[in-house]
Image (cartoon, rainbow, N blue to C red):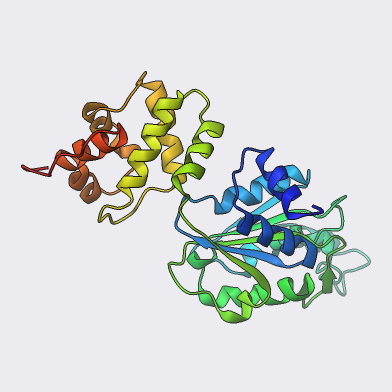
Length: 303
């Protein structure tokens, strides 16, 4: 665990994760207080990455539950190994247990542990990091499965009883806020909203993550993306898209931005055709001029 906010910032930076003091404070408190860290923000701003980085810093196993519509207890917590149970029952027929062939098949030996139960497993030498990713994609009913886990770090299985964590996992929950998460779950967490980064912070991220990009190209990429987010887009690019684009430009051998290379590679930044069509042409030229430090020309003509 970390002894201070400064040490938390340094630990994240050692893994090339550039955090601001507010995020480092939330992480520090969640670790010290034993609470889950609930992270909301636009896609691609680093919510999932901080869980991965924390696992590396703590040299702890990372257990990830990717949420989706229809996720239920059988896929998130546990289910029974019915095939193995059936084989066990068939093997007992005609033997000493013939009178009660199904006795003893609802034990931990026949349990398939899904991510939430894996996080409580006593076999871990140290507390694992549990990432519950994109909770807002799961149905609202699924959140009730998490309340006991987040309150007491235990799971109740009717046939066995209550299984309690030997090492309380470090829990991260992320949401892109496609729907609201219930207050009952949020009360059990430290909450933090991750904003799009400032230009200075985003430039530092690009320098760390895409060392192959020259200092001038990195600065132009960040200036372009920062201005691009001000456009009326259906989906604004996140930091993940910035990094992908910067890496792509290095593969293309680009030393500076120009309209041609920007137009050819817009698919790295924008994921909807309407957004691509909006930016092509005059908008792209203006954004390039701004990124290069020139005067943006007035928009004219068809994009």
